[in-house]
Length: 196
Length: 257
Image 1: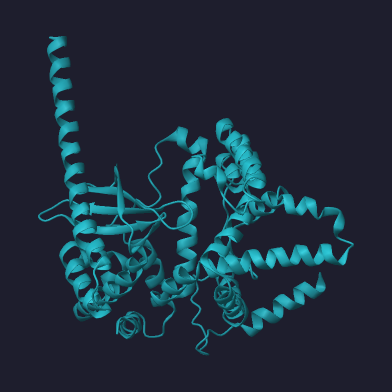
Image 2: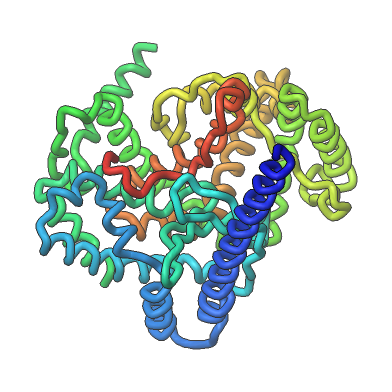
């Protein structure tokens, strides 16, 4: 009897590990698709910056869950925001991110992402895909992609050298809203101005 | 001492308004430290804008990437003794040995460290700091403090920086030359070059960070503090108590900021 329980336990464990490994592989392949077919191809192609921006917009809308991130970055101000504010913020946050990231990724021109496996997240159904980019000087830049399970998979955070895009935006935006006389409306206006 | 205090008070009064000229809305939660930090940040920002950044831009014009790499390597090599000591203090004997070898090879064959010959041989840098050593012994980090000119820091970061500076070979080389004019000039000149070079090499990164933010102070603060979170996992006592989650891992459902 003891043996049987042990056997069932081992099989279950193996099965659990296998499921986990499959998810990790799925997430890694997903990020590979985003970086290789997406980012690398866009930044290395010989087109105008405007065309690059347009392609990035498409890529970001397809693979990044900006609704999910947008809600998080407003922190407790999301709850008190009106429906119109929420809608406006998400829209402008989307435009602003596309613009800043297409520029930031341009610095990775001619370089490629190396994949170094995955690491677990404390959030259910989420996983970190670890990549690094070899820079001209110094040690390679560590870039982590936080992937959320679902149909389809989505990226919910990008962590460059331990600095998370989502946490940085949240700390910045909540500090801004606290300080600005017009609160969230000022932030939306400011982001809209910067996204132009 | 009195002079320094007066200068601080002047700086504080001069910077009580933000760059747009409007008075800051200070809520109750915003601590006095935060007010000081923002004021000092504004001062540093202006200093950077008026002095450091233009100088770094000029420096970029008159130097090539190759020259800047030599300068970066030279100053990085001077940090190897600090890596060796801290690797040793943290029980990383092999890494400590690596740092010693790297310093010996690069200081000689690498022409005073300007070329990283050791890396070419596959002997890679094992960066470490007294800051990390203190973190390993679970020394608390303390609050975020913006220092004049030096910029973002915390008490532990500052102590670590000061202790590591003591193992800088340049400091010892010029130790008994402080009475000579050339000794003083060389010491200040080297420090200036180090920071100008650093500023030039970070030009694109800092520009893109500023461009991508609506509150630059908050962005720099959070980026600096997030980067320091990596030290948290070094604390052995905490590790023994339970698994420390990765610093960049957080709960998306969390509503507090």
